[in-house]
Length: 416
Image (cartoon, rainbow, N blue to C red; front, side, top):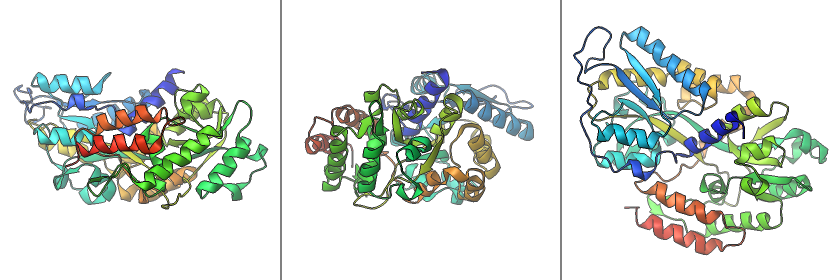
């Protein structure tokens, strides 16, 4: 893959929340270590305000750095952005050394572990714009009734269609699939020698969309539901079409992720998030496509959403300044600027109309916010999903019911 494609793949994983694994959660709350004598241009608690981000690439790094610099100039408070090569490891090292960053990217499934050991501050309810965030995103970052941290942006999954291949197969706008049966039909028509109709990653973060469409999910109302009949139906559907050759995992067509399978035209359709737009413009500008909502399954419409928040160290001496910076970074204008720069959708409802006007061909992603599920976010969820993903790789020859029973057992061990 090219560098840009690798970056977009990293963004897909970041969106899926797997960069922060449970290994980063075995932390004890420590002092911030920012004990410089306050002076002009310093944060009131001590020294420069520190931020640690896990960037998807140069565009995101520049956008965040520029935004923080603008806030710093406006506020008079020095602030510094560090881009992590390995976010979990560097965050863990910061806490262990007693000098964590004031603010950092935090995945939903990492939240519970940090909250349990007191490492992070629950500042969400103190935000001036707290009521503007999408409720489902607030739920992502709420533990024991406390809204911990501001969602920085979000992404959903949608159906990406190669319009040239679509037309060549004799399909029209009226054929855009609204149901599973229609999806199977068009996938069959689009499948040729050397090209599959539909591809997606061999992971819950993609296959889980079918589970949602069947009316299932890994956790429902705080209860483990991995082995539900709806989830069995979803995996049976996927398995059937993996075996008839109209669906394929991206890896099975020689691609590192769905965006690469689509860009190289090894797949006529893929299930991906809105990070694919950056990959297409950077690496495959000649491939024409449209974005549609995922087809409804037996349970109705369904998709998955992915997000991260701005975590704040509980022992940071700079919490007032950090909260002010978060309010700036999650404001309407700034989130729209981030969206233009590197692709995510704003996490606040007040930006929806402006985002839709600026991205009329991508509104299917935003429509998904109304019914999207988010991956389990309790402590230990990352390990469960990692194990589930390993099993999904063999779904083509495996037993969906047995696979889901294993996931159910693993979830029951962590769901309280």
